[in-house]
Amino acid sequence: MDLHFETPVLKYWGFKEDPFEDFILQGESLRLFVCRHYELHRLHNALNTRCIGVYGTHGVGKSSFLRKFEKKIKHTGLVVAYVRLAGSTEKALYREILAAILQCHSEKKIKTGKEFKLNSREESKRVDSSIRVAKELEFGAVSVMKAGVKQAKEILSAPHDEDSARLLISKIIANTKTAFVVIVDDLERMEYFLKNRISYARFIAGFVRTVGDLFSRQGVAFVVSLDKGFVDQIGHKMPHDEGEALFSFEELVELPNFLPQELADMIRKRLNDRKWGKTLGDFISPDAFWGLMLATGGHPRKGFGVLRMAMQYVEMRKKPRKLDMESIKEGLKGRPDSIDDKDLTIVQFLSIPGSHSASDKDFQKAVGLGRTSLLNRLQALTYRLGLEVAAERIGTTTKDVYSLPEIKFYV
Ligand SMILES: Nc1ncnc2c1ncn2[C@@H]1O[C@H](COP(=O)(O)OP(=O)(O)OP(=O)(O)O)[C@@H](O)[C@H]1O
Ligand SMILES: [Mg+2]
Image (cartoon, rainbow, N blue to C red; front, side, top):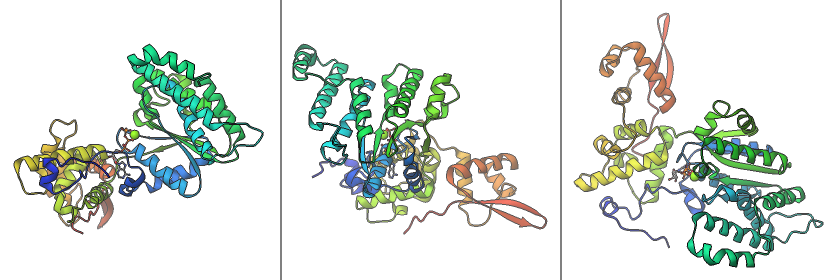
């Protein structure tokens, strides 16, 4: 049974559980997963390459995506060794990977040739306790310092270190009779434990090289998470060697922010799951939704954060239980994101039925911009909000007319 608090805001809104709680979707909660069909398909098709990076900004949904992918390919009978880096040290990377592979081996999901003797349970013990000691030492736990290390050394006749772990992984890969995928989530977190971007680049480059040199085998693929800022820098600011090595990610799959319809689906799904029992439009007014979309760009973690704060604002003021523009603006207070008023006016104008173009004088007047500036804004919004554009013919000339993508708020 899940435990949760009945907080004042949830009570006021009539929810037992927070609809916008931020958690990685996995197991049962994957029922809340939306979209990403294209990216899932691309990643699936990329499995014949050895090393694939999945990247996006913080909180855009990398971990949830990797969990969904794991589920999808397990469904097709593929074996997956899933590694979620505990995040305490970059020094245990290969041991963490080895532990996941050994787990699959001891469960007989990964089978190796008879001539290769592998006692996965014994090796698991060697690797697990050595990871634990590495982590505890990293945190400087006093008890471990005093007694644990001595004790651990006694228990572990030959604990794995990174080199021995790397070697054993390569042997397992060389001897495997089962195709398998290794997913390494949170690899991008290692950036926080390394001194700077360059050390991090070296660390990633070293990993990619190791996969290429030691772990390369048809039927074994590595999928790792990376952050967007880092990938965008590849080949630009990185020292030559690291930039080059990073290019050996044979495939890079980007996870973008969500489009308005997708964010709407995500919110609707969460509301339904928490037994809201009404429509999306009864929860958030269309213009407040567009405000949220403009401020967060369709980023789920940012969006959920604003919704939670807006719900609290409504609860504290004892206002009717529906998010309007005011509550969204309140929810944005103290955050780095904000709603650009001109963009909001554009969206509001586009929501009036009819065709609208940058040469429309009423449109220009409402926004307070000339034709060229309005056109630039519309083009930028087309990319961000997925505005629909159609060419309309008037006499001998054509002009682009823009409309908002249709969101079904009241079904
Ligand atoms: N496809 C999706 N469908 C529904 N919700 C999603 C989806 N992707 C992400 N989310 C939600 O967005 C939030 C962030 O997701 P997640 O933790 O997977 O992102 P992340 O990129 O791994 O974050 P971090 O950078 O902190 O590791 C979570 O609340 C998650 O439930
Ligand atoms: Mg994550």
